[in-house]
Length: 225
Image (cartoon, rainbow, N blue to C red; front, side, top):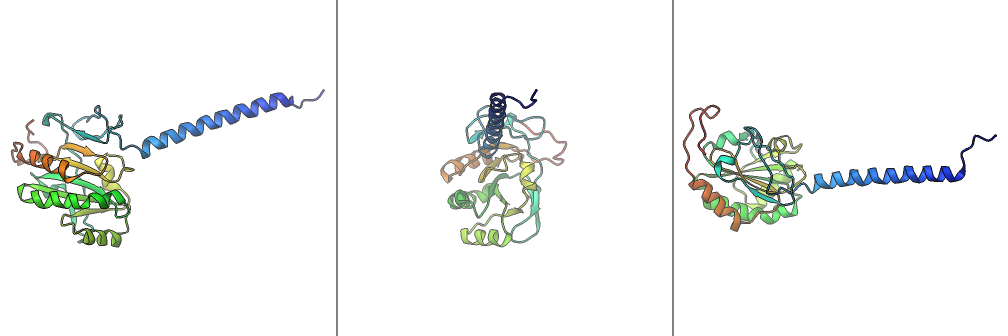
């Protein structure tokens, strides 16, 4: 008696394997799409514990954290400044509102929003507002040229591998990203898209006007809500 499987059964088994393979591929592609399109935030994005942890369950690309009591401090961010090579980080801007912008000179939307960012910086820098860029996945010389060509006066951290960006906890696949911190360096707003001067300027002015008490010991002092 032949032990060879019946041709019909062989075809069915083959179709079954093919169907399962296609389903696995669709699942993998869907997961990848969620990561790449992770620019969604949603109204139910949350912060967890005492440190800001961005969660993006929805489809929106902007979220604000209000009232102030709902905000959480971001982890300390630091690295080499793109142009000077000196160490720079959030601790250099204690007591200031800080606008963190993730950019790359290869990113067309970054180029589009750069003049708006510089405009808001120039108009508010004397009111306790600082800007800090995070340059991601760039050749350093290209990044320097971009800064010069765009006439950007605020500093940026050179972060080719994304180590600093990971500490920000926003999706590393979304560039540009802008995170606005209040004077206690708590996340007050996140934009996973280009941002305009018209929407950013009123926000930083409002945050700069919020009550602030200087902390002699930031790790233990109470942050008012």
